[in-house]
Length: 378
Image (cartoon, rainbow, N blue to C red):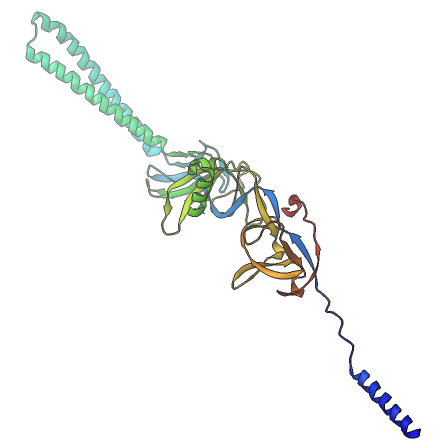
C-alpha cells in the first residue's frame, strides 16, 4: 500500500506541475480610441487669395517750368493737399518785368496797326477817284498787313510772358499726400530738371496682383463668359500685413490683354475707394477674391491633414480599420480645408488620436459633430 500511495502521490505532483507550466491566454489587445469626423458638403463662398502691391492712381514728381530762386514753400511736408493749393513759389521779378516789356511792345504794335488801318481806309477812298496810284495803294495795304502781323506776334509774346509768370506759382494738380520738399528756400531751381517734391493720389487706391492663367481659363469655361464678364461678378477684399481686414470692398477694373510668358500669369488690378486713406502706395497686401454665388464643396478639418514625401493625406476609419487616403486640397475656409480629390462625402476622417494609431490597426472611434460653418470660419 505504501508503494501504491507513493506512486499516486508522484502522479498527482507531476500533474500539478504540468498545470502550472500552462500560462493563461493573454487578454485581447485594447483598441486605440480615436475621434472621427464625417466628410461633408458645405455651402461656401469660393475664394482665392493672392499677394498684391498697392499703387497710387496718380503719382507724380513736381518740377518747375521756369528757372529762378525758390522763395516760398507753402505746405506741410507729408500732409494732404487739395487740388489747386499753392505748393511752391519762384521769384517772379524777372517774369513780371518780361510781362511789362511785352505789354509795351503790344501797345506800340497796336498803335502802328491802328495808324496803318487809318491810312489804308483813306487810300481805299482815294483810289476810287484815282487820286492815288495803284502802287501807293498797294504800299498802304502791305503796311496794314505787316503791322497786323506785328501786333499778333507781340500779343503772342505777351501771352508767353504771362504764362511764364504764372508758372512761378506751382499749385497741386490734384488732391493727395505730398512728400517732403527736396529743395530749400533760396535754392536756384532749373526749369524741367529740379525735383521739388512728389505727390500721390490716395483716393481711390489701386492694388495690382497676378492671377495664374489656369484659374482665368477655368473660370471662363465654368461661367461661359469672357474674362471681363467673369471679373464683373467678383468681389475683392484686402487683408493687411498685420492680419486685419480692410473694411471696404473693391472691384476689378483692369486685366492685361496678354499672359506673361515668363510667369504664366495675368496682370490684374483692383480699385478701392480708400476713403480713410489707409492704403498707401507700396504695401504688400493679401487680395481675397470672392465669387458671386455659393457653391457646395467637401470640407475636412485642417487638423486632420498630414503630409509626407508622397504629399498630403488623411487617416480614415473603414469597417473599424485605419486606412490612408491621399488627398488634393483647395482653399481654406476658416479652420476647414476644401477637398478636391481623394475623399467622398461620408468618409470618416480621424481628427483626434492620430498619434496613437497606424495604418491597418483596428480602433474604437467616436464621431465628432461638425460645428456650424460660421463658427469654423471665425
